[in-house]
Image 1: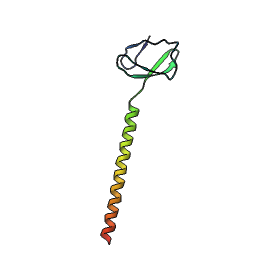
Image 2 (image 1 turned 180 degrees about the vertical axis):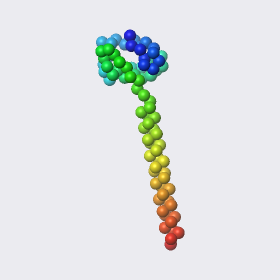
Image 3 (image 1 turned 135 degrees about the vertical axis):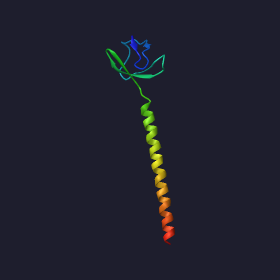
Image 4 (image 1 turned 120 degrees about the vertical axis):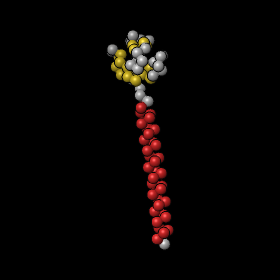
Length: 83
């Protein structure tokens, strides 16, 4: 019997039929688990942190783009003042 690394619930899986890289779902906590080893079967939770990190990176890029736009506006205003 395999146990969920997140909640400890038993996951009913035939250890001979599972493949490395396969994604399983815990019936109790609904975590997605990747099979990282087959004999014995070892599961690693698939973290949502990766998705969150990608989202944060996207937000940082948007902020940088806004800053660049503000800099461009400031430069235009300075040129107008010089004239």
